[in-house]
Length: 317
Image (cartoon, rainbow, N blue to C red; front, side, top):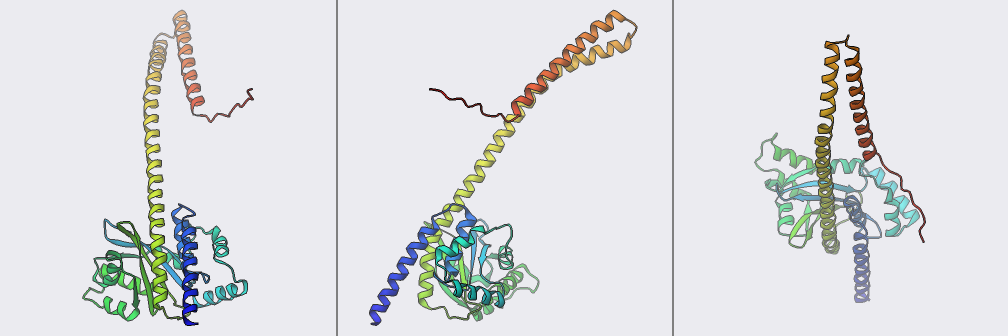
């Protein structure tokens, strides 16, 4: 019976991991991917941790920066969420569907605190996190270990001390599971999860399952980040090309405007010098009118070129 139960549990876990892997690949939007990963880590039908955090690695500075978090911000909120989940008993897909309105522009208090977090891996206080990133180790960190790491020889007001205080304030559970988000030959970040409100212990099965999910999520997160970077580069390229086109147009327009303006200005000054020469004034005024008409025509052509055009669709046999 024990063997059958273990085999059934492993089969269920494999099916769950496959389902989560499929969900991870459903989008290339960075925020949507990150939210899906954290939902799978915290959802009761999935891994069921109380809270989950995702930190992305900036390789140039060897710094982890908070990207997103998911979970209750207080015990009261946790109790409310769990009562609602027990009442509805939703599936993982239903939980993700409920989160379809997720708006990164309006972060929860927990997300806001996470986004402001920066962890310099050269800081000796974060040795375990550095090991998880650079050696790709999945770890369970106990709070006393965090406290002992932060009791290093750092000045009370130093940047390292402030980073330690910020991390201790956010990760205040007795146990924290940490898994690297690895993609091919590099690590893109870390996922951290805890059971702050339920107090449930994190066992080896929890760690292995979190590690498996993080391995699947790592490639998806990397792809989404790469896709986002490509989109940004494309927008910058289009913007640069547009600026070049505008510059060329401005040069041509200024050249076209300069000659008529010079003519208008010259003849206007001549009229001012000899206002009593009726024949001369009439002739020069006629030239001014012609040149102004040229300027108006040029301006009209320029506006026509920049004005959005409506499609004139007609059927053809």
